[in-house]
Length: 216
Image (cartoon, rainbow, N blue to C red; front, side, top):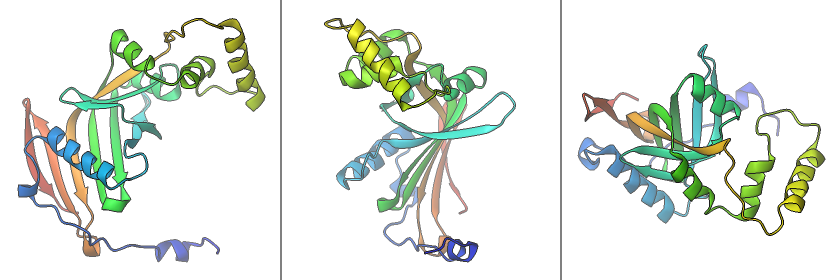
């Protein structure tokens, strides 16, 4: 198979599995998100907590990558990372982000926009202590987003850490922790036939969520 422009232009899927009406959506978008997330879990979607995190630097140049959702409540949507990574540096200078969940088996997307804050040290430590030991060591050993000479360099840093810290408790490093995206807009997208998708949008205005329908 050769991937040509013509091939890509003709690559399409018609969505017919479900619909989404305003009356189907809870007036609290966090409650609605949890309902959809439960559906994704019940559908046995592989890693339903996978989400795209989009950030921008101080000049507005965008960047995006996949991260994992590790908490969702009225305070916002949580994830954890290296504060010295590219995303950490961008969020320090421009503390706004967009999250996108895509569950193709359900023909659904959720888009979330909001401000970003660091989680407190205690919350980050509590989560760090639940991680598998190898993941804890990886968070300490990896200089995330920095140029390294080869794979062996990274593996040696892990080996050195293990050799120096035998029988010692692993402590969360200061450069690693959590963020919370505090939503100001949440959109629920349900694929429909002929690209006439259903889009139910929530926007926070004066502290309250306002629900509306968007054209596809």
